[in-house]
Image (cartoon, helix red, strand yellow):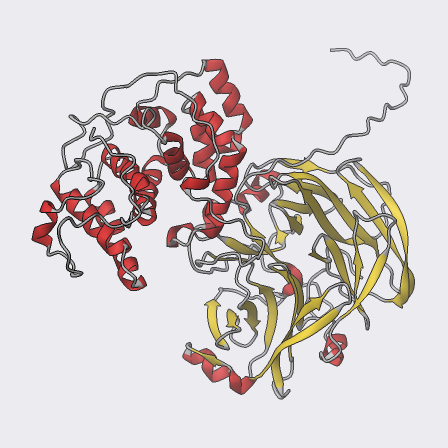
Length: 484
Length: 153
């Protein structure tokens, strides 16, 4: 497996500078289709305490001009009216997070209301199930490599304000040295690392909290980090683990892992036996996280699954579907195979690299995770495809497509890169239509599923658990007195 | 403020549409008739123009046709935005929508209120809602330190 600095997908040996600041955003109006969805509570189901405000009726508030000219004569007191908290819920839950938390300062009543658990639940569920055009859940397909050198600037990249524009875009910066890499996203927290020397950080893009993890004693080659976090019933993160693998170049029948836990603040090495001998692909990528279990791709067999929270530590091999194109997987080192968790499903999307292959796109969903059984969802040929874009339409029979990412909220959309047209396309599973999602300027030669990660800004800010720090008292030498 | 009869929700009354009084036909009332309809829960005095708009919207929001409802919602949102209705008036309709349990009306007006206050300073919001600041300076400062990210520009 290769380490971080060389994790480009360029088949040539020279190191090509990856695109700086590739960012694709799309805030189409999508809902999460998770079955475990919270229902939007209506006013009838609200549970809250009406706290009598300490003030009495004020005069008519000035609120700017009203074309009806009634503000001068009409006294409205939202707080003394019955059901006033219910109305505040309705209004405040439509504010962006930043405004909402700022307005906690209005008065103690508002502070208490906004801090209530019932309010945060109401806010989150309204965000998720609301179907008004203005409150679509924004997301970004983030290019993992970031060339900023300060945590502040890295956090600025994740700013939710810039997500709210609709449409996809892909931007590029001047060639600069890569300083940070995004390794994983879990429950609203981002694991990233700074390169040279390797230091890990966990950050919250909304609250801008930045926690640097203690360094491991191991300096040799542990990579392919996975990030798993646990939440309580309020969706607040209670703890997280980072799991990384030792770079093993030959076949092995055990995993050598190093695990960091936010609860202990320490790295611990584990040696986990494998049921079969496994070998890792040449260009390693991080694991995918499905139901809190990390899955790394292994040659021939498929994936090795490891649950960092399960004791005793063990791993399991999960085969990928037998009727997939194994040959192209080996030849192209898995470049044309996208496998990821998508709205509670484990899904595999494969593209045939050769335009002359009978089937172009194939997709499988994991039907029984415990048995490791897949179900083929579809296989489409190139003649099945269509596009509303004339140029893309003319290329459909011969273009090369590389899968990038699934849409975080829409089970029907897959994002791919069209190599010849140097653009990003979205594939709609239902109508088999390909559409141009964005046309970037500049080269995007190395854009593949390995170098992007879907980033969803959480609907409620969660604090980053800070791992305990082991205090090491160094040996004190003879006291030195400094002059001046 | 007009007194609302809180127990007026009889089982035969669809809370979304106002009682059309003596009308027994199923046709939509003509615009000129609206001002004479006796509504079960009367719309508070927000001025004639807004009253008409709200009443029309309530009628359309009870329609079975989703296109009619969507079009009505879009029209209402456009109207709210273009007419620059004051927050006090908006809040009156919010309260009314809440009482008659018209979700779409509530949604449209709450969105607008939220939109108007989201960039306002804390002191401005207090003024709008007629709220007296009951924090000590120390308490308010502590709150700012608790969520510094909310106060950044």
